[in-house]
Length: 482
Ligand SMILES: *[C@@H]1O[C@H](CO)[C@@H](O)[C@H](O)[C@H]1NC(C)=O
Ligand SMILES: *[C@@H]1O[C@H](CO)[C@@H](O)[C@H](O)[C@H]1NC(C)=O
Ligand SMILES: *[C@@H]1O[C@H](CO)[C@@H](O)[C@H](O)[C@H]1NC(C)=O
Ligand SMILES: [Zn+2]
Image 1 (cartoon, rainbow, N blue to C red):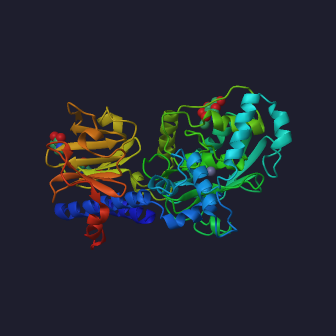
Image 2: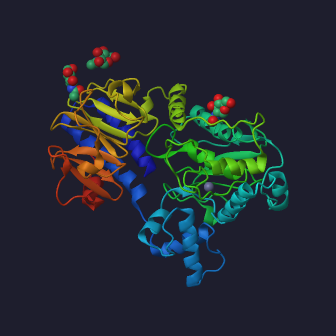
Image 3: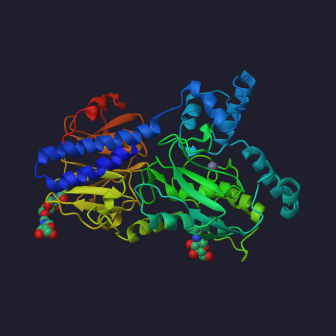
């Protein structure tokens, strides 16, 4: 799925570059958009089947793996534990929200020790117990921490679709995140033995069957507690740094480093060490709980002051890493093609617009590609990045979707009354994808396992929608235009 959409995204650009046939191009573009939509949707929409819930609870340490039959009481208690750590209503039942949560992208490390570790952390805050004393007495579970402050690391191999330069910067910054709030210091070594090693693997990779990677979605990465010093990433994920779609390699690396330092999962909602994947939000990346946990093991930074940079600055930094990358080797491939994009659409003049993170590229119908431009330059009111974009030939306007809002532009001028709340238009928040679908004469917006139809005249949903993705199966599986 991952490779397919990447392949198609680049194939579409090649196709655009070599063809003058507008209709064929349109059909092809539609297929690309559809494929893009479907692959995002499928990755996020699935919910766990109740029969698989037991495997999940075993895999993540809520039930003992050896015993294959579990009493109803044990299962209920395991489900309650899971719900507590995941901020769900604690019912002890495998209801639909719980099954959905179990299927969402997360870290592959077991949650087993999390609640005990958290209780210890909170206890030490309230009792003000000397951390040194506390650590000696109760933290000495085997392999719980490194007995040195100076650690080395190495990137063993590399993800697909991202160049080495940006990956190296992302990893360095992820380590810096932790060294800026603790007594630790990190150094990268490109060869020789190191304390911590980061590597990308696919499927089964000699960590035991329960640790085998599961393709896109599900477990994204896992790591081992000290002093094994290994962090493994699922090579089959769609890794990105500046894109809005896919999984952010910097965030996941920062989380896995936490494990290699001895940190367990955190039940605090905004904590980096929370087991579920989140996007970079507005709040600082490390929560009080992350900082407390690492300081209890390694003390405060040598200067004493904790240093964190705002998340917005991190977003800009990631974009700069990707742009500053040396155009080595494959010069024939434009930049936007070396990675995946967030959205693609074609305006009234046949110019294709490609969006990724805070940037966009244009490719004219003659095939002239532009350099990347900041979104803000042409559409100043947009947020840092958008989730979906689509041009409507009906009104000649460009629609953008991000979070809970919709923007509508005539050229570069924002229309009066916009941005508008998605809910006012009966549209979903955080859509996966959108495009104008001529046969219906309306805008189609994809989200999870459903699609919505937006009437652009009334700016409301058409009756009888949303509907399931099944309607599009035939389109997608049909022969492609090329
Ligand atoms: C760490 O702190 C330094 C300054 O001490 C700062 O330049 C850097 O951006 C910080 N890095 C992170 C990831 O917070
Ligand atoms: C199409 O091109 C014309 C002339 O270059 C320009 O004025 C117009 O804004 C363009 N339309 C779109 C939708 O970009
Ligand atoms: C496209 O690029 C070619 C070669 O660089 C140039 O001659 C041509 O004028 C460009 N066309 C447009 C519309 O910019
Ligand atoms: Zn984890």
